[in-house]
Length: 106
Image (cartoon, rainbow, N blue to C red; front, top):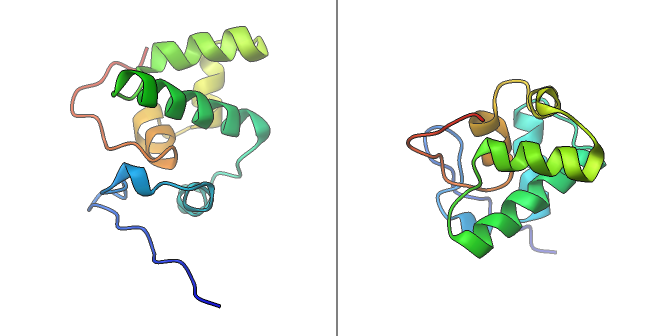
């Protein structure tokens, strides 16, 4: 059985080619961030990936916060509970996004 080719990451640990993202890569990136992905994490990741596919840009944190509120009744602090070292550092990385250059955290 052939093992999959490992994902190529940049010097900060983000995927060089976001189109190579898979759920298995997400699990590996999450392990590296010491995050155990729950159903809410996966929901956020899928929301982010759908948003990016539709708009060709990673969603700003405020869109993810609105999604958490409407889908789960969770407030803005939930995003930072799910990804304690930051939306860009952890959520974007695990979701397979390139690191945004300028960013609002919501």
